[in-house]
Length: 368
Ligand SMILES: C[S@@+](CC[C@H](N)C(=O)[O-])C[C@H]1O[C@@H](n2cnc3c(N)ncnc32)[C@H](O)[C@@H]1O
Image 1: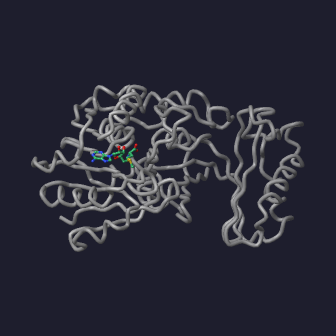
Image 2: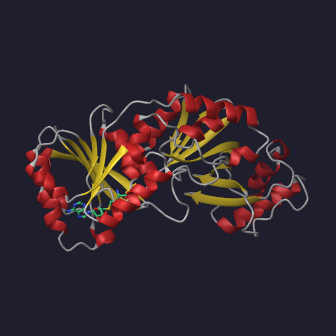
Image 3: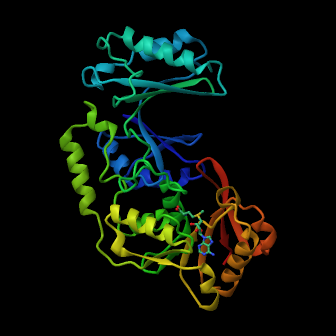
């Protein structure tokens, strides 16, 4: 079977490694989509283990040069829909078109629904108007006139970890936080620090990486409602994942100047059942200007759009000072405060572009 994993921008290389680690070969990477093939077991495995992926899809059909609606209709109609779905399970059709002749998304969606009904699946099958129902998502994706018909096996995006309260969005995406920890090259036996922790995300993701906890272990997925993956396969993958957890001890410190933030962080870590393993403190990061530290530090300092901080320049000047004082520190910050470049000696830093919730940021690192 062929699968597609979507990712956030600029972390495709990490997502590819996650798939290759499971022993599979990547066929193609385009526009934040990684295509690979393998066995059914990969559906629960990648959903359970991908830290930086967005959604995992089964590739139901694909075709080059789809330039008219008739070809698209036939492509969708010829899919053997009954082999994937349980009777009457509602679906929702989404679409996205880039650099292609067929681009009217509403027309593509209604054509796709008609093609599915025409393939005589079940009566009253498509009920995407009813927002109270859980639905299977079909995605019609057309890029450079190549159409791909995809079935979402994840349901909610994979960055929505089980420890996240539904109503609450972390200031930094969970999948991006995991990517930052992986990019930092943190060696798990060394202390890890986030000095602007706000809620928890970077610290909790760091601990889950160190302990090899599968990020999707305790959440629900769409594939559990499909014919494709038996409950035995799913249970087997969950139990294998549980056995892979390490029980080592790690030093992870998270602090923030705002006491409300620290209590929010503790609450979220409590939901994650990891709170006693992370040391949360109320602290101004400037206190570290008088100490020598030699740890890995990954932080998301305040920046303009988010915090309207009048003293932003002085915060970033002090960040620079802290890092110059501690030459042994493996430090990284993610921010969209582009002025940082003008405060620092450029040749002592390198940076990498990343997106947080669609906002362009840089991940700055000291050049050792
Ligand atoms: C962009 S937020 C961090 C978001 C965090 N990465 C998360 O995912 O929740 C920046 C944080 O820096 C904190 N902060 C601002 N000035 C600080 C200072 N001098 N020392 C420590 N924390 C500070 C703010 O209270 C805020 O929580």
